[in-house]
Length: 147
Image 1 (cartoon, rainbow, N blue to C red):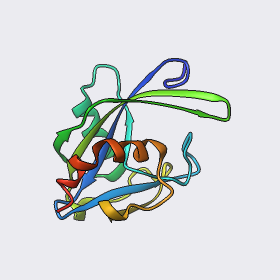
Image 2: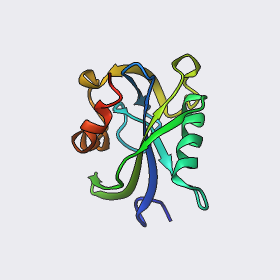
Image 3: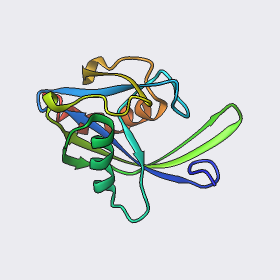
């Protein structure tokens, strides 16, 4: 059974920022299961027995090799998409997290082609579909961290 396809998957997402108004985004590699070549905020599957906060910090360590400080948990959302006739359904628990910019690197080289720091008003394209949806829903909360 595959999370998100055979049953609704649960994941965490995160918008990492440097405390100076810049947000960290990653470009998804061709090895990713979907949304290849699109810019994403970062995230991953919630593991059994793990709290969303612990999962968020674990995923940041796995993807960027650094620690983070959770500033805010954003409202949970449901994300459904259909790609090539295959429906995918995820429940996403997004977070805003501060990281030390000098400690960030690409730790997950299979899934991440590149990373970049961007102002909220200047996010790159194309964006992952869920990021586009989250920006509409959470723009005001993210704006508080964009100085």
